[in-house]
Image (cartoon, rainbow over all chains, first blue to last red; front, side):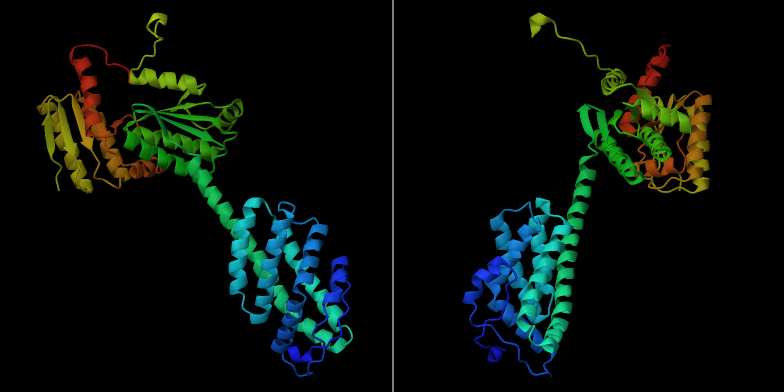
Length: 317
Length: 128
């Protein structure tokens, strides 16, 4: 492609940065490919042109990212560093037409920036900005020959769109992966079964319970009863904001299943709202042993287990 | 396949070792109810640790055994219900109403000890 190069600098003048650097761009490739040039040849020429103007176009892109107020979560240096590698990867993908490298890079990039709170809108925004910056550079270079410009853009646009889609999809996939992992972690964390005394377990439930979580809670509790040889279990639902009929029935089943394993269940911390709901929807809680708060629940459990808590006299402390 | 019934003090212990047919279950029921009288047992323990499935007939038979044994003067405890079995039982609504349950054989014996000790001395069993 270098054969087409001419000493005339192509007018760009898209931004102040571009203007400031125009003087250095003495060796621009010039538009004069044969009309039969295939898309691959055109793409190669585009890439050569964009490589040439790498520094200037990248700086313009970074400047426009700042102008658009994107990537606020990152420092100027970080944006610059990321922009440089995105630019190079972008050109490689244009040149080779394979998206694997871009896909891999988009994955790594997302891994770095997802935890920083970068949003999908921003990632899509910067990739589209880069596409525009490069397209305008091409436009400026080839605008003398309208036919050629058309064919250049025909070659450039689908490739650029493919890259933009790949990067955006990579980002969204990474974010979904992070979200899935976090949901898993929350599920694990949110159902601890705690032994507080010999044969006494506490199961504090925090947050909304759905059918899946209710089932998981029950399974975990039943296993813990076996592992700890528990006789009494206190289920504290102070942290549960609301409950529907399904979950209430599941709670009743949990109590029954625990009983089959020889453990008594005490439910504590029913909020006024939950108490009202349960009575209104008519869940049969007759079999459930309920105590007002966790403290009362533990005291009741200790009584059932035969413990007696007495204050130590002052002198013995 | 029959279920062996062992005597341990005042208790009868029946350990189910494999899935039982309905006939086996009825045999177990008849044997236990007969032996409660013959050995003047105060407690019956049925160990179901080996069962990984419990159908409605098995559950009903266990409940029948408990009620019949009570009429003949013995308290029944089911021990060793696996977590998965417990879960599927309650989902099917088979909750063994009115039957005592304990974690394992040791717990079951301790439970019956406490019940029968008080009773044999003419005391009121301690609330549990």
